[in-house]
Structure formats: structure tokens, C-alpha cells
Length: 493
Length: 97
Ligand SMILES: [Zn+2]
Image (cartoon, protein in one colour):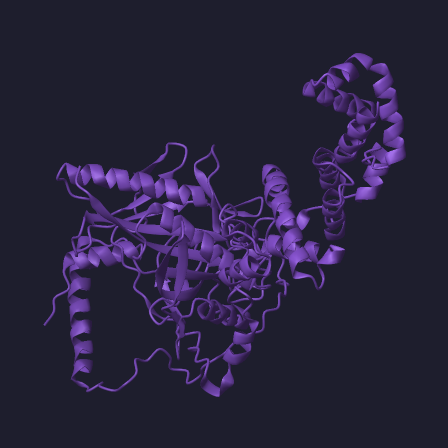
């Protein structure tokens, strides 16, 4: 089969988590709200209403622009995109793609240590549409307009992505940026972050782009990669048979594992854009209407900066730093827990040592549990201080790794403190030499045969005797002390 | 002179959800051609260095602070002029997803 270059561009929609909607004062948070509860004459599209833009949504648009290193346009204008669909009560969507607020910018993605700059064409601000529900029975659909009018950012990339994997990494990175900025929940499964892709293939080395296909309905990072991989294969097959790609919109069907051609909403696709006469244009620099300097101050440490800091400040591997910083709340949990470990303050070496241990516990144990049960780190019951105590107890040999895991599981479920669990379950590691000596004496007198074996050079017998001591203490004796004392006793015998 | 074709009228009618008779299509094509040609006279004006007009209000930067205020109109009234409602959903003819 011929070799093809893959060319992908993305259009990503992110809902802004403002308190009120884009053009009216309705509550913008509708999770659990009854149908059409958060609506008003403006977002219901009643005639004669005056939409007034939400200042915060505009400021956040500029904030994202700054995070992407983009240019803030001197002026941007809202406009009407006209089409008929039951989820769009005005029969037009107020958007701003013709004169967008944000121009250019980029995100640098990291694909297995290969860094690549993905350019952004522009970002524009618009309003979301309502939700349609299609009952299985009955010849009708139901409309809920709670979501209609939610502020929505559309981020449009240049066709710089060269593989489905790069596309997935880009969306993940963008999600992190949106979350770090605190402007969007950016959850694909919940639909606050949505992604459409334009994808085309061209013979390797050829300059002109091939015919592109738009792929929709990719509702998770996994789906982005799977859907685009499937689409690459599909287009490769068509091209290698010397057939032509049809320019169309295809929807990803996750159950079937393939993209299917969609009937277009508008057969004669023409949105007849025109300037929104009800909303004056936005010119941030004019009369300091929008304080761009202040917005710049809002810029937090961004995911990549945090990752690099974690690598240097805590000597973490890139992989660990990446795992911890991919989620801002996890990164915060890590740093707050680390700060609770007493010796960490003022000693860089100890800080790095403890950081590594804590990172391991968070990534392998905690994340496994959180992901397995679909719980957010914010709902994690283990308090920072308790996690710090657990790490300390493991480090100082007061509990074994096995017991630590048992305590950890209990903490995860109940959120109780380490000492409390140790006491209740009798889990404390016995480090008291006197106590261990008593047990060793008992074991030696009960196992004279094994003691003889050891004396005659059978190393295996030593392991057996250690096992007997551990059994008598239900695994709670400090193994290092048991080893040391047992050797001393046997050599004395 | 630019002629608006019957096909263009049909496309527009479809987008605007208008049902037109054959006779209406012919007369609208003729009227629209005339209107557009009349508007063509604007092309005679020199618009070099003139910003496109987005607004005629003379205003700019009109915002509202981000604060939620629930509508004081009860939901029954808000949905009062929808032809069909089911459990506070607006009921419409089946749309294909
Ligand atoms: Zn509203």
C-alpha cells in the first residue's frame, strides 16, 4: 500500500464555568436541575429581548489567549449564525468566528519526548445550544434549554497534527490548560469539552492537502484516537483503490468501532452570517474597558511549567512529574501532603527523598483506587496530614509495606487517621526488641530440629525460623529486627 | 447584471423553511435580482480605508457582571407559548440525532 501523510486539524469546544450564562443572568450550572429550569426570555429566544454579554466570559477568553501565547484582537464582534434546529430557539447562534477575540497562539505537545508546536488559528466565543432527548418510544423529541446560552469557547487549530495520537495528546494538554486556568471543567465525558476533527490523507511528500472529512461524536480521549485511527484506515483503503474521498461529515460510532456518514443538518449549507446588531463590538484597549494587565496577573503556573518545576524541585522523573501535574488537583494534593511531612522543610535532600516516595504512593496506589472507583481527588477522604503520617511510618520502619497497604485501604474508605486504624486493628509493627526476643526464645525452643539444621549449615532453616517468628506476631514484627536478633541468638546457642 | 436563479431561490427558501409555489419562485427570483442590482450601486462608493460596519448604535464594550439571577417568570409561563410540553420539556417532532 502507498504511504500517506496524515493531516489533522481540530475544533474544540469548551464550556466556560461562569456563574451565569453568556447573554442572560440564568444560572449556568444545571447539573441536577429539572428541564428548562434555568431559562429566561433571552435564552428562550423570545422576540424583543436584549442579550448582554457576560464580562467574565470575555475576560476568560482573553486569559486563555494569553496562556496560548496568542494575540488579543483590538476588536471583536458578535455575529449571527443562522440555521434551524430545535435545540436553537432563536434559529441563530450568537458567535464570533469572523472577527474573533483571539488570534494565533500555540500549544507545545510532547509525544514520547518529541516536542511539537501545534499552532492555533483562532479562539472565538459563542453560546451553546440546548439539549435534545430522543425517547425510544414515541414519534417525538424533547428539548431542554438549560444549556442554551452557556458560554462556549471554540478553539480552532491549524492542520498541524500528524497522527491520531498527537490529536489525543493535544486535546489532553488543552484540557489541562483549561483546568489550570479554572475557566472550564473541561470534562469530555460530561460534554463540557467536545472535539471535532478534520482529517485528510495525502501521498507522502505531496504539498496539496487531500479531501478532508469531518469526524464528530468523539466523547473521550480514547475515542478521539480510535475514531481517527479508523478514519485513517478507511481513507487509506479508498485511496489505494484509486477512488476519491467524499468530503462529508462522519460520526464516530463507538459500539460499532467505525465512523458512519451523517445526514447533514443543512443540505444547502449556508449559515448566512451577519453582525449581531444587538451587541456592540468589544474593544478591550478602548477606555480600559477590559483590564488586560490585570487578566495577565491571573495567569497561574501552567501545566508544563509545573511539570518542569516538579522535575527540578523534587527530582522526580518526567513520567512521574507528568502524572502528578496532568491534574491540577492531584498536583496540589501532592504538594500539600509533602508539606505535612515534618523533616521536609528546609532540607532539599530529604524533601526529594520523601517526594519520590509520596509520588510513588499517589501514582500507583491512590490513582489506581480513585480511577477504579471513578472518584475525583477532590473527594478523596484521606487528609494530607494522614497521608504524610503514613509515609513517615513506612519510612521509619514502623510499619511494613504490607501493613501500610492495609492501613491505606482503610483510610481510603473511612478517612480515619493512621494511629486510630493501627490501634483498632492491632497493626502496629513490633519494633520492641524485648518483645521480639521473648518470641524468638519460644520459637527456638519449639524448633530444635531446625536450629540444628541451621547450625549444620542449612541456610534454608534460617528462613523457616524467621517465618515462625513472623507467624507468631501475625506479620507485625519488624523483619529487620527479627533477622538481626535471630542471628545473634542462634550464634550464641 | 446578476440574475438570481430559481435554484438559488429554492435553496434560500429551504434554509428559511418557506414553502413557495412555482409562480412565487419566479416572481421572487425577479424581485431579488432587482433588489440586489439596486444594492449594487453601493459598489460605486470608494470604501478604501473605511472599516466594515458592524454596528450602527455608536456604542462599544457593553457588558454585564457575571451574576446569576433566576427568572421571576414561572416556568409554566416561560413555556406557555410552546405548542407542546411534556414534564417541562418542550416536545417537538422527532429529530434524527
Ligand atoms: Zn436565560
